[in-house]
Length: 265
Image (cartoon, rainbow, N blue to C red; front, side, top):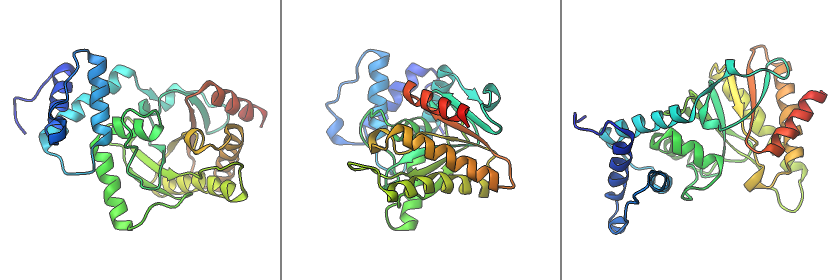
């Protein structure tokens, strides 16, 4: 690794943008904007569309330093900062990419390679952005070994790389049509159970779930929350290993739904 790599966030951001633009001839005419916010958006977009291809040690060193500092700027939340609503169960509204637990759950798609839409608002995009390019490379290796797309209701585990979370558990939830079917329900239950089983096999003691299959996958928020809570309760009651589970929400409506369901139990 060279000893002349950038050391400030502004320098790192510009260095990363230029490195990513240099990877493709079609980016030759792309103008780097002047403002820091616009540069952050461009960098995220370039990371989002980058395929899982090899990358050099210098790039990883600069990227890792940049992403860790970005997370520090946003602020990290730790499990001990939270108050359980029930024994072993927490509710937290915030950015899951800033949560320091043993594992966070990513609502993935069947390709399991992350969201390629530039600056998309989904959790898959956010997790891959702030984990760094290593996460897509790791997912690509897993999928190459598997040889086919991921089935709904299953899960895979990777390192968290530049995230505060030590691991990411990737699961594909059901995509709901005009109504929720029994198959959708069974698939969503399986998502939660698969993640909990995978976490236990890997000795994770804390796991944060996002709202799987809501939003882009159209599962009604209240029905999805009830399935999530029931599935976690059932698993914790059956398991011999204690695990702390965080229900992570981002929207006020989901926070209200989970709070009411957890308080009424």
